[in-house]
Image 1 (spheres, helix red, strand yellow):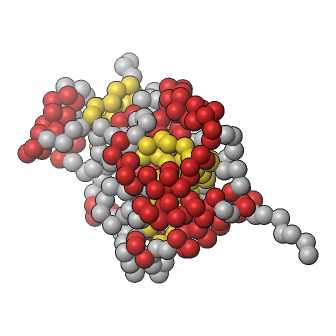
Image 2 (cartoon, one colour):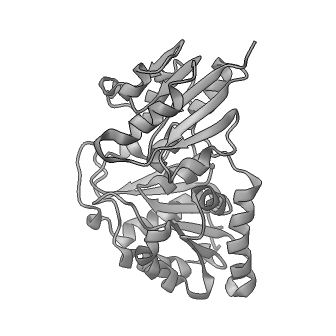
Image 3 (cartoon, helix red, strand yellow):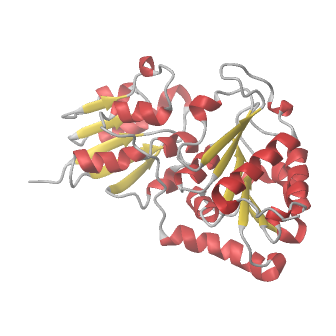
Length: 321
């Protein structure tokens, strides 16, 4: 009897791929021995190269007139799938042969977290926690960038990872405030000896520049230095993470790093980082109300970073009078 075949159609965005990554292990539980094919966008594709059960990743590069769906159909229509899981709710999943289909529907969006929605989709009896599937290649690529910088002057010490970019309008805290935040943290005794590592993709250099400039010799530069799994491996070396509402924020939370997400005019109560070591800070912290992310002050974020530190690294010992 041949091994069962499963097609998992997931997002073209990093954050959504991370949020729904728990589906991979759930497929393995529901379909033991499954050989999984993942269809996703190019940026998140490296996430799946070491995922359990995944034998193939098909990259969906968006084309005019939905041409990318036609190309995917051509690649998968010849297989008799035991299960198709489609969190994009595409018509393609109805047009290929499958014994069972699990297809996302927007009518299910009733104000619960996306992780919870995906868990309901899979009829799981527990939340499908996001997970990063690291491999040695990613860890080696991260080390090849970080280790020379540590040896070259940054020196040893805990790392605070910073992700000062989000690619959707209105989600990016102003770049100069990241520089001001790093200046404040450098002067804070809790962060004596810490290193400040900027993380981002190839196009994220300008927003990261003020933070790296402020960090000076204590800075580590991982902006545009590797694919998303290498960036995840770099974040996994950090003691704390602070970032805009972005894919890297979700990466950090899924990796189990203490994570602070910065939010402006988006639903922090729905899209905040998932997990027990996560916090959010928003320009308007009244649920259902919004303010531009520019309303989020350096003082507010600084205090939130201290709170993250004290919760997960340890509060400073009071000095006796």
